Length: 474
Image (cartoon, rainbow, N blue to C red; front, side, top):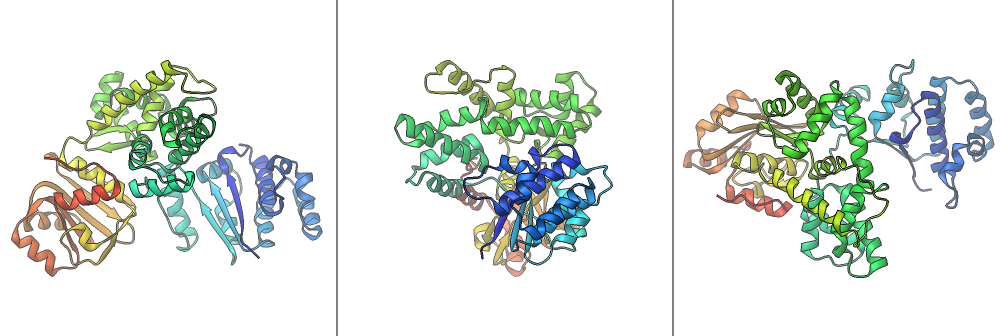
């Protein structure tokens, strides 16, 4: 017997808790019993759905469904799974799932823990980073460390290449890989929907699918049914709702998409608002994962979101986009060029370039020699990274998961003094010193120790090439 997979996207559940639970039961029964020709909507009629269950389960479920008891309904939903083990349950946009039941007299996490027995695996995912980190922390305590947290990072050149060849089943030229990587920032979902739309154009218009990357990306970004459009709209509507200062959050996101990168003081000046309001709002947006900080300035978390924010001001949402829509395509290309300049201005210092490189390799595993001078045989770069920007422009960072890695980024020569300052400031398992070069003493120390990594510009450029990130040039 194979493994059953159950998927629920909480973004599309009814907001009423009782209706949401009934819809969850509908989805569970659909995934566990439906034949290939049955549509999910049929199962939204619970009468139809319950008739698909074995008779012994059906009578029990019907009796309890009539109680309109949230706690009982929730238990029914997960008890159904016990009869179909082994089962993998995927709940997407889990922050929305918890929001539905917030304030209700029901212990959602407690019930899930009771029902997760042998043969049932739960995968939860969400796009609100700060919310998911808080949830995962709570889960780890509630589930006694049974959960493993994985942060999905952006894809590099090699990964994008493999994904495109898998979707198109063709040999893909490198120029196509780099084009879609540049447009999407390596965001997996954007790559997939763009590639699939490009394939549709290929089937109807001829020419290889990579010839339509530009058109496909814009189609998904701006049309009524565009999937990137829907994702950006979801971020706009849902993340802003989570912000305490919603009005300011909207204004700040829009101004960053046009004039970023900006400091909080510059945001306050542009919008004529108090500095304290600008700082607190931008910090909240950073915690939500909607903006990112590079040195002391902020930009939207991706070029795509910045482009979408700029375009939405035009209030044009076509139903289709084709090669004949030359005027609109040129408008989009011009906006994209302007957004590109915003993101190009970010990488003006070595420290900021390294900061961006580190952000792209979180979660990746490296052989020690790939990172430079070190006695460490292998290192998995932790998924969580925090930065501390000093007044002189140098940056410290902390990478942590099960291990804590303290990082010092300095566009100069690394000496034992650099290590001494860092180790006094941050107690860590590993010290990673990144700079232009090293003096003999620190090299000798690294060769004797098992907790020091020295990375120079040449090493970093090799890593950058491996993941498709631009090289540092003096």
